[in-house]
Image 1 (tube, helix red, strand yellow):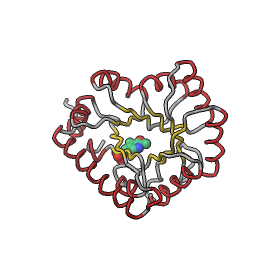
Image 2: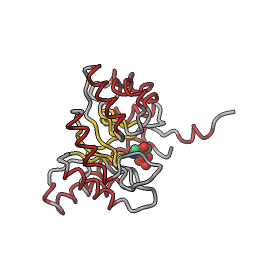
Image 3: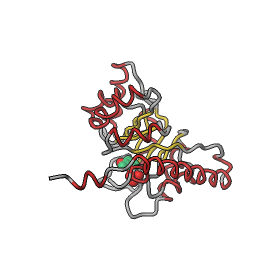
Image 4: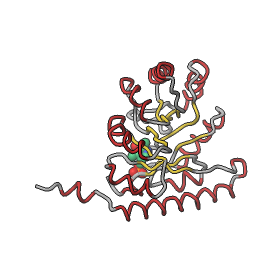
Length: 237
Ligand SMILES: *Cc1c(COP(=O)(O)O)cnc(C)c1O
């Protein structure tokens, strides 16, 4: 029997490319709003991370052809299967890990990804340091912040952020470039975005990654440097 679900969920190249253009346009409009409202952070450019998790290479290719170069995946194995090939064809890809990273996958993650957005605990930070030293390849990392203090969600709680960031930078010499968050489902995201910006600022970090399909315009208007958008480009998963 034919698997109807998979066929229905596949997106046509025309649709995904049209979605991509709309999302990019919306981001530009939203980040301009921000520039007008808050001169303190003027010059913030919001970049789009196209989240291609669960999508096949054939679905990703049209979006690549349309010029998109920054992508996000949440699983190391899945990313390796798709992106080793795609990275051969397009040398200027920037691939972000946006999902949880187990320490036994760190070696493979460092091979395939360009930015790790989800550093969320000491053991992972230490393992990354060791792998950077061993491989001679060092990637920019973001700290994941559990802004909603949800028990089941990964990330450093806001009260522990300053200490953890300083541990990563001072003790481990990790290239910590920014913070990322995933606000709790069903809550207004704005306070979480504002909190992430605040923690970044007081720790001297320049980059925040925040905002998904439902709230990327708000995030861009609040000074996101990266928004991570999946279903608004590739359709529902
Ligand atoms: C899946 C995912 C996204 C994209 O979600 P959409 O709602 O499809 O845009 C963004 N960030 C993370 C961490 C994700 O896992």
